[in-house]
Image (cartoon, rainbow, N blue to C red; front, top):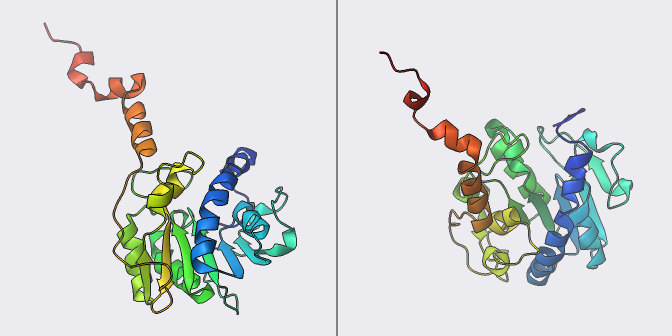
Length: 237
């Protein structure tokens, strides 16, 4: 994910700004549960989640992003972002109280999934994680998976899934549907007592995502595609 990329243009970053309100709802819940004093956001984009974390009193923040953010208007000071190609292993030579990886993992090839999860586990004992489910769609999604896929990779590293956020924000109109649908907390075994019980995460589809898919299926173009081809072929006399 390094270098110039026509997919990550000004429109993309305007859309990223819409995540700020989601962060302002989700992060207070997470901070109340985990009490982190330091936070790293792996795949931080323009840094909106980190900006909210800073407003909530976390002074030790760091963002990790590809080199295509150069020249982009950031929500945090540029010195708080480290440029790194997420296709390669990440080792920060320190640990944070909390790592974020939000709607990032699906952009990496499947061959890099385990390595990416291991990088997050090296960064922190607790991880706020979300990734696109199959059929979710988006720019350059190459590895959309159900939550269990990621939970199994975290489990290999000794992390347990705590599915405690989705119920709290599921119907909150301030939270973008894909965060409400996908956000999970993973905690290293023995460190998640204040998070709540661990369990295998359910495969859920948010009503907003389903409604959008139905609207697409019922669009005039899609309806024509679904009509039998025989209706458009000439009948032989």
